[in-house]
Image (tube, rainbow, N blue to C red):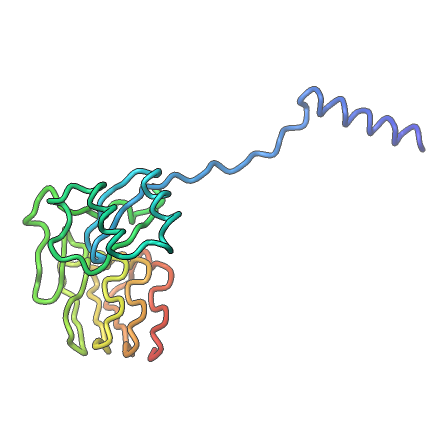
Length: 200
């Protein structure tokens, strides 16, 4: 019996040394695109190094310092005249999030305000209104991440059948939101869509 065990162990060692047993395949690291965002609407692509430098110091930086750094990365004419929010995000290149148009659009006319809706190429970037019942325009096909975030006024949202994608945290932290009515079925719904919507 001991001889058999010795032979099996010897065979395993030979196979390993000869490359007969394949090494465990490691999953390829996912590739990302990095953005600096303004007012949760506009985004500007930055390098991985710039993203990591900002992220590493994020907790210790004041908003003014972040804006000063952003001014060195992003051309001044591409920063909105009024900045109320600034952030960074990493988007997997395989994700449809990376397909969302960046600011400034090559076609400025694509960025339109339809009453209280900021829409670009079918993407609802932000709802800026204070209505209790919100009917999303039929021209919208995608609801961008954080489009309704922190809106305390909205109680009911009606989503048209043409909307095929609802991004991450689209309605996050809307404390009085009670109803979301979908006329159709979205092909993709992001995580935390109604996170901390305590009235739902």
